[in-house]
Length: 249
Ligand code: AMP
Image (tube, rainbow, N blue to C red; front, side, top):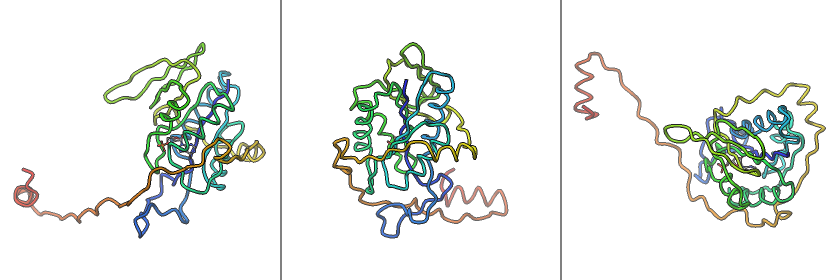
């Protein structure tokens, strides 16, 4: 069975993001970019299923600019077999990504489609759910355990206050949570091998998608700056300040 994994190029999670001076978005010039961490977990899960002999081919796909090939090569170095770049320079929103992924699902007929639960840039947490709806497929979101057996997949979901295990008929959409697995590091030989793996380039129009944006960002603002703290000399002074200045006791 084929597994399709959707990955996104995002600002590296170690980078302290800065809002652009004109508040139209986040500064991306000269900023380190990486594979979205939840997507790395998605690739790892698909590769582990391949190593167990359950999955036969792992296809990774991204919708993004030409440079997003870097993240596809990373996914190939982690063990994916081939990659598809749906190239577009403009920002793509979850609905457009989901429509494009639906086109790829129709063309490739994967049994398992794995996405991250959210991309850490926009924190949308929408694409997997929208894809499942558009493709008419069952979904298991926020997965912390995935077991594929006899034409079905069992997904243990991290829900508020506990775990819920659901069983879905394949084909199905699964989105990964943080505790699903710990992704491996790509070894140097695998990074070299990844350079030779197939990478197809498509356009959104190949999947009948022309409108990439239906939401306009009006303003992006950084969190309010915290006021500097002060040091108090005695417990009495602390109590006095908590009572009369902070008014919390
Ligand atoms: P989001 O709904 O934007 O929070 O993203 C959820 C998941 O959808 C991500 O973890 C990716 O697996 C997938 N995804 C989002 N944007 C893209 C994109 N441009 N290309 C490929 N996959 C994407």
